[in-house]
Amino acid sequence: MQLFAWLVTYALLSCSVKADLLDATLAYHQGDYNKAQQQFYELAQLGNVDAIYNIGVMYLHGQGREKNPAKAYAWFNLAADFGLEEARDTARLIAKQSEQQHQALEDAYAALLTNISYEKYDQELRPELTAEPVHEQSVYRSYTVEPTYPEHAYNNGLEGWVWLEFDIDKNGAVGDITLVDSYPKNTFDKPLINAVKRWQYKAPSEIEHAYYNRSLLYHFTTFKGEQYQQSFQRQQKSYQSEISELIDAAEQGNALVQYYIANWLSSDKYNASKLLKYHWQKDTASSELLLTSARNGYANSQYRIGANLLRGDYGRVDRQKGLNWVLLAAQNGFANAQYRLGRELLNKQYVDYAPNKARKWLIAAAAQGHFRAKRDLAALLFELNEPVADIQQALDDALKLDKSHPQLLLLQAKLQQQQKQIEQAKFSAQAALNEARDRNWSTQAISAFLTLLN
Image 1 (cartoon, rainbow, N blue to C red):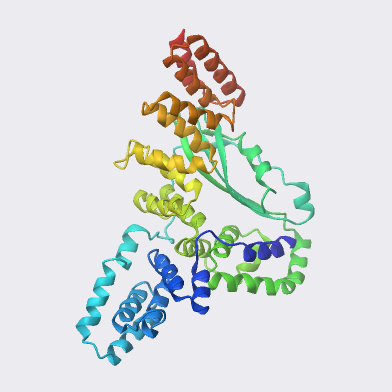
Image 2 (cartoon, helix red, strand yellow; image 1 turned 90 degrees about the vertical axis):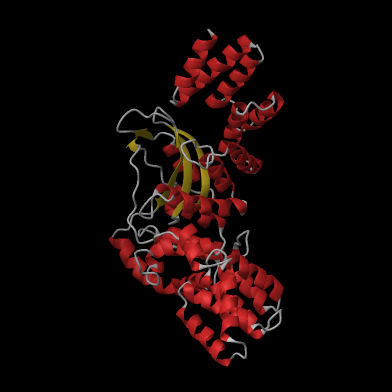
């Protein structure tokens, strides 16, 4: 149960990079109306109904700007379109009391709909949370190693989760792994990464190409035996205030708290989830809170929603909506989203293939230290026949993080071949081959290149 108190403290003291509904509301109550409206407007574009309603309130009362019943009418109607029916009653009351002609009110509403509307949100962003997942079974895990539960965490009753993304090569081996997020930090990360490195995947037929961005949210939970059930009932009351703090923070618009609770609710085996599910009882509570956090501007949640849409978690694979959410997270500076967007734009089977745009996002992610972005940026520059100096700089930058990486050594060999440095190319390619064998990675491309050299 110690973990739950830690969760409360961490989540309430942490803050997200982008302003959320709570930040905007605090600015509003402090009288900083310009800041509040700007933040409300950014959230309104994501379909945040509370932000939409609050803009209507500000126009109605002239807070930070002149009173404007027509614009208030428009924003309240928009809030009703997003499901807040009480806002429609307010709009009707404005129409009844307003001295303006009804057509002027409707014109203001129509003008607003050209920028923000539920129809646009429905077409471009809204996931169908109640739909059953539909996943393409292109590859499946054929060999699993369970991670070791850290002794200090187990002894102290700590539970948590780790979010990884990784590649699968043509051998079915797990390639490069990226730690996206985890809680608590630096507790379960290494045990899971060490285990996942040993996993193997297969396909119904031969794996024809590498798979990128396989996503995994792994939950570390302690065994819940009879003794635990008895102590859980006794300790539940002592954590009531912490539960209330979390619930209040989430409902007041703290996007980070919403994100953490969504993660806890995605499993029913946590101490935290058992307590929180007294309040959030719906089967879709985890997905709904994740979407709320995403509409509240939190990049991690936006990226997760986008990745889920690309994977088919909400009834079908929806590439356009998925990319829209990933783009929002990338624009918010989330390196994993920037990398994912770059990779997606390099997929030649789609009409949105755009290598130059992909390069932009890979550069952005690489600048934040994202290894797979550094790796793929060097490969892309080589493919685009960029100047050797630029390719070498990108390659050296990636090699600083993994000096014996097989793909990077192969790229080094190809550069050396271009410069007629055949012996150096053979040496680099052989080193790549040896390292690929050590890692149990596919050697097909390296062997083919060595054959070409010899």
